[in-house]
Structure formats: structure tokens, C-alpha cells
Amino acid sequence: ITFIDGDRGILNYRGYPIEQLAEKCDYLEVAYLVLYGELPTQDQYDEWVFDITHHTILHENVKDLMAGFRYDAHPMGMLASTVAALSTFYPEAKNVHDPLVRRRQVHRMIAKMPTLAAFAYRHSAGLPYVYPDNVLSYCGNFLQMMFRITDAKYDVNPVLERALNVLFILHADHEQNCSTSAMRGIGSSQPDPYSAAAGAIAALYGPLHGGANEQVLRMLKDIGSKDRVPAFIKEVKQSGGEVRPMGFGHRVYKNYDPRARIIKMLADQVFEVTGRNPLLDIALELERIALSDDYFLSRKLYPNVDFYSGIIYQAMKFPVDMYPVLFAIPRM
Image 1 (tube, one colour):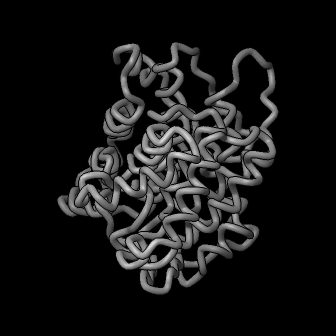
Image 2 (image 1 turned 45 degrees about the vertical axis):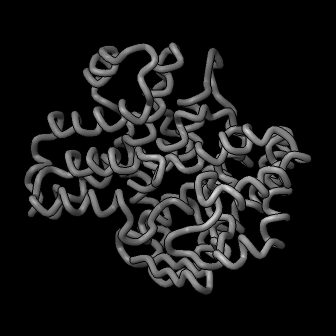
């Protein structure tokens, strides 16, 4: 499904380079590709989008379930709980040997993730829930469910909608990582897929997996300003591994993470709309010094996908608690 050559910085889905998919496709096309092995024809794509779009609504009882969480509940904990609860709404999902039943759960899980995620955010922010608008695209609909306040109609900014599509494509799959392994491990006992997905979300929750871009943001804030970057790099080198440069290095990539290169270009487009994130100057200076320093180069510590994604999400007004949720949606 996914091919990675970490030494050469290559990432392919089903044989297609990630750079081409990020440039030419939307997220639902890539989801179809990952699932079925080929990009959809126009007819297949239209049917696929229709099936996803018409499963975005949640049962009203899910709102009652969410009302039981504390006002400050973490959206990722709410997401894991509500995905698990969906198994009780769709008991036929236990029939995992029926291909038609399986396909229906695929539609439901991909369709309902943005709705659950947005509802979790709105609960934690004390805002009323915004229902899906089936006229909008997958990513456009998610943005309006997150951020619409009193407007009768939410105007989705096409640059931000495209940026979210690209970020979702980059996070769609990544071989046999922690959360994917968890999903498959649970799924091997043949429960319903919602129960397996809840376990995968729990695995993604950790700071060494889905929470890494949050750690990058905290690091950049701690550095504080561009002129303090050299002192931070000195601290990294002298700490004996206790101070870690978050967003650098990867267990697989021993070269520049190809996803990081795409995100870095994407950042410029987003900041033209949102205004420049002041953390970007710190990040660029940190990357510049690190990529000319033998300490980083000898250890193959190149920027990874988490290094710039958190800065973009912050500029788009996503709260930090939502970052692992923004990973869970496309990875589903």
C-alpha cells in the first residue's frame, strides 16, 4: 500500500509519489487509492464522494453522549470514546465477513470522523454544534463545522480548504506504524471496525506518534525568538540527548522527509491568507542552522512532517488539543 525509502526520502501510495498526489488530488481521491489500489475514474469518484457525503450525519444520541464529558475534555479522548460508541449504533458492523457490510462501514467511518472531531472541539469550546453541509467538500465541510459561528452560510476559503486537503493526504498512510499496528492487532480478533479504530486512536494519542507536532509548537514557543536559536542548538548538543529538537529526525527517514518539503511550500500559501505566523521565523532559522551543522547531519536529523504542520494548523486557528485529531481524521 505504502512504499518508503527512508535513505532516499521517497514516499509512495500504491506506486504514486506523494508529491504528485499532493499536487493533483483531493483527499477523498487518495483515500480511494489507498483502499482500492487505483485512483478512481470520474464515475467511481462521483459515486464515492456521494456515499461519503451522505453518511456525515450523526445519530442525535451521540450529542447526548458528548454532553456527558467535562467542559474541558480533550477532543482526542472524546473522539476515541465516540468512535467506540458508534459500534452500538451499527450492530451489523460485527458481520465483518460480508463485503457489502464492510464497505458501508468504510463510508460511515471516513464520513463521520470530521463530524465527531468538530463536535468534540465545539463541546470543549462551549459552542453549539454545527451540522454537516452536504453541498461542501470533505475538507470544506469540516472547516465550516469547526469555525462557523452565526453566519447562515460559511464561506470556505479555497486556499485553506486546499491546504487541509494536502495535509490530510500527507497523513493518510505511513506503513506499519504504531496506530496502524494497533488497528490491525485489534482487528485480528474480528470485532467490529469501530472498536478497532477506537484502539488505533488511543495509540495515536501519544506524543511519540500523533502528538509530535504539538511538541514542536511548544519547543518553538520555548525558544521564543529567532536570536535565541543558536543558544538552543548549543543546549541540544551539550545535553547528552536530554534536550531533543522536536520535529527533527525520523525512525524511517534518514534524509529530508518528503512530506516536510511539501508542507514547507504549503506554509507560504496559508500565511498569505492568515498572516505570517511569528513562529515561522524561529522554525526557518532553526532549520537553516541545523542543516549546516555536523551534529544534525551526522545523526541524519532532518525536518520531518511534524516540523511545519503545527505552525500551519496554528495559523488556521486550530487549537493545539486538536492536532492529534487532525491526524486521526485522514489516517482513518
